[in-house]
Length: 453
Image 1 (cartoon, rainbow, N blue to C red):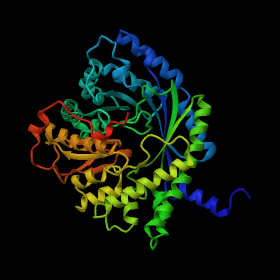
Image 2 (cartoon, helix red, strand yellow; image 1 turned 180 degrees about the horizontal axis):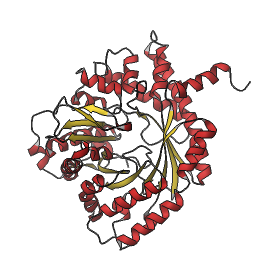
Image 3 (cartoon, rainbow, N blue to C red; image 1 turned 45 degrees about the vertical axis):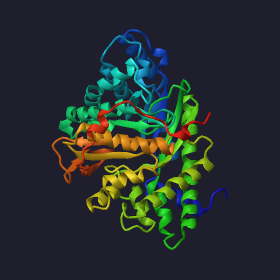
Image 4 (tube, rainbow, N blue to C red; image 1 turned 180 degrees about the vertical axis):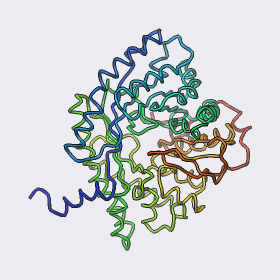
């Protein structure tokens, strides 16, 4: 017998009871060959290429779902950073590029398109500045377009001019989408060490070092990990770690199967598999509840960072044993609004913004989907970004900030975003000012261990 009855039941339970899914199949497409001096012509080329290359994506995903019985939650496209693809154009405003991407995404039926992005970790080009200045209008006038700006890296240090500007931009995006609680900010990520092959939004883009096109897969299964730990409540940490690693291996193998099959049907190379425990607002699909299953009364209690460190590391170890091409983030996400356990911890006062920052030193990404008071200053947002970029730079890991200053809301209020974005209590921000620090500008140099030539 190829599979035992126990193994068959275990697999069925993963999907039906514990919410295992393929969170996204993301088709990366290079737009470098679309660039020309005229914006209208460049957009025409972008539209034609995306319709041609990504045309079969959604139907391919649906076919695989039906044939294999594996849920694929999102079908997405990631493109070359528009700051590169549109740099030669004469236009000062890149918002029309965002609208073109949005229209194509709607026509194809994809859920999101990522890549309205710029890489400014060491400085700005003209294209970078134009893209960043376009973000408030672009994100408030589109539904499916996601944006990211990489402002720091372990090799280049932190571009504090970019950090200051992004605080101002996030404020402006929130104000432009004030009628929807600042939801435009949910589509904007500020990165340190942004990966070029990430299938997860809002930070996905198709890096300049990538192939003409490729298929990346993001797998998520917090509920499966938690269920595996429920039967190990008296186990030592060695046994817990082994259980997480073995479970991550099984999840990754499933993702590898779907990714390879989707790439074959689309006639593109398979890129990477990102095994990231990405929660949803649904009960039973929470990273915070995994941490509590290890023995914490609540996520945020002392010991949370240690528990999260082990979880992230064991997920990575299980993943790399199951797939040759693990990439993206891979580990554990700790968004607030998208995780019902995190929301519960914030409501109980067990998690503060400072504790979340500490947790980002060991998680996969950073400060994610956090609602801030609507009157949070641009300088304060920039300072939050600077701290998170420093964690990523010094630890040679990806970190990110996706915060939403909710217009008209104060600490303790509730903000609802809907769908996979969920809702969250507004978190208090340290009242001490950082304005003078942020106004200095320039670059914070890379750490000494960046010199590895």
